[in-house]
Length: 357
Image (cartoon, rainbow, N blue to C red; front, top):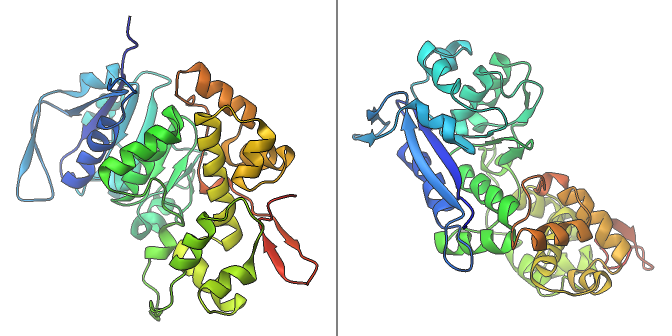
């Protein structure tokens, strides 16, 4: 008997953004096993069956009512521009409260952009870390003081409750969910088919307009490409700066402006991703995985994988193998957990994420 596909139910509310409504269908719809069987079944419901107004010049027709939420393994709430008292007063309408009442305990909850207002008004985000569009973050925090709002990230993962920033960050979050559920290989294939990067570095801060616009003539793209070919080697900050003909100070500042993280954090993140792929796809011994990923030793590999994923490399591989190519939903991932290691070198310069610790 084939396993049942994980059911995702998207709640379409009046004033929704069509782009965001389509994100879960697109991303989850591309996630399939080697035999081509879908990992997810994605359905849409409204507060009642029938047409749902959007912020565009057309409506969408929704076949299912809120009762469908009772069948969901994951519920996704995209943004809406007509949330009324939810946005203005932080309280659910009677109809929305009744709809959310259909959700079973233990169901995974996901919001895209201002869809987080719905989860917060329902009390699902109390005491949890969450995010929303950067332009709404201050208002969101005032309205829901019990929520720990992080306005600088693209998404948050608090286990059974996940939130994303505005618009395209919904793609980042859905890819993260696929990666968390079924591993990096599946998520990378979904990203490739969707023609988007499997993981975006940085956070919302890079998209917020600055009082004085920064020149975009100087980029760190070449340095990053150079690093990806040498992740297994020791990498000095001075080597990175040299690729862009910049001083170390200028390069470090420019890199953070463009990526939202330090060079060390970015490199460790890339090494963790390489380690994940090796753990999922190969039977290499841990020492060899550590060398190939640039961590040098199994001890260093274990430290960084544990910090980033919340489990040891051995447990990650075991979970992946046990599920036939799927990493369990209890394995968190994301750039916020990465911690760089910068050690002094013999010549007094800095070594960024040296391959052996």
